[in-house]
Length: 117
Length: 111
Image: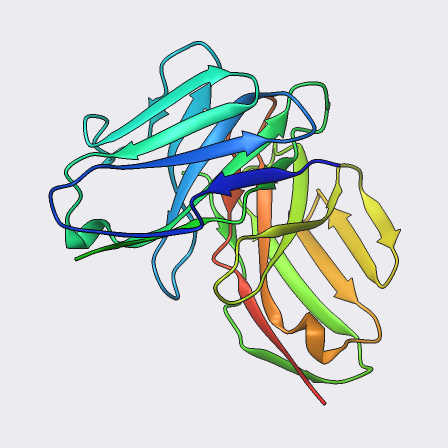
């Protein structure tokens, strides 16, 4: 149980294009999903918290107009990197919290590796 | 500023030994504590969580929590080369709040 999927697993795009990443909880409902970014050999960095049916809460320094987050259902959140640039190249990982689990454990997706040329 | 600290390592142990990973946190009111394992190039995977003071065992893994001293540790018995990874400590300061992650400890189990 508690499986989270992400799609695509990796993407290469040209500078200036937009990229959408999907995060799905496959066997549980997630009222809250989280988006992280991780650069090589660095720690996870929380970008935003996504709550189903409401606007995402962004961490300080994360541009909400550049990283658009939509959490339209209890099993799906999307992150769109708009007008991507080479500095946006990173490993993007989502996690989901089971709505019915008291412990607030976060289950991570496999991640999406983005390379912007 | 809520902080979680871990030794970055690398921590090297021989195969079959006990690996001990430590984590300290600054927020005394923190509620829940999680250990994740992250292999190079992969996303974190949950090992176990602990809420109450004392020990919690799951297979070869034992989590230990001491709220008075504000530390949580993870012991890995009979360490295997496949245990070589970065171990992340995550602390939940309170209900409905976000995790605070430590920087991770890199463990290397030598055959």
